[in-house]
Image 1 (cartoon, helix red, strand yellow):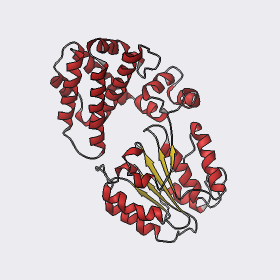
Image 2 (cartoon, one colour):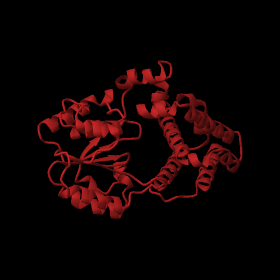
Image 3 (tube, helix red, strand yellow):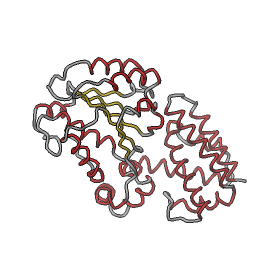
Image 4 (cartoon, one colour):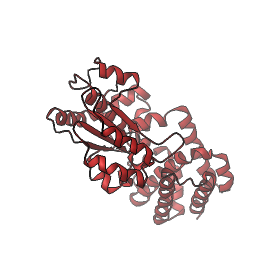
Length: 327
């Protein structure tokens, strides 16, 4: 596999990281955070490659033995930790592997790199087990923790890492990249829908995701017309519950913006303005805030692996929407 290039909108952040490395001031642990779709994984991959490279310049050389091993999919001085397939949590056993890995000498004589993603997936026991290695990592050890929502990571973990938050991307910074991926006619629209997250914009513009968005839109239009919410829930794919909640949260945030300001310029989903205006007429802003809190809590429970029944969550979610839409 090819080594990952730095995305255009992260060039400034990249130059800061390269400067730290060149000055010998790279921290032993970085927490790179930002919403899904901002490109933190790509930034981390470029940093992993440069850190392990035997002859780095601005980026990894791509030609040395270390780069060749990394490109092949295996490097003895790189350890990646993430939830097991089908699981949402990182448990203690993989973190014990980290502690053993850190105690060993790097086989290629350079850095050992440990990547934990997402950091907030570590359960309490795993996070506590990691603390000792974060406190005493030894020389030439780099921890890279990736997080969508760093506040869900233990404060004791966060305090031992240098934090690198990645914000949403202004359109001008990613216009060329998005235009290349989506075409000039659609780049701006999907950038708005994604909330300024270019990689997410490309995901949302894919045919299956467009179809899901259209289906959810139709569902809410039916609710406005008085459809039965449990029946509408049965039409939606309960396996897409996280995506449905994500859309619901984005739409509620739009609703609240419109309800508080009356302005449409900041809407992430301008094509839904007629639906928003109908909803704004039917309920108070504080009701939408309560529904927003409910959606965020359900997504948090899903992320923690609490495994609520998807169909019941979906039905309860649509019943709440329906009640407000018909107020």
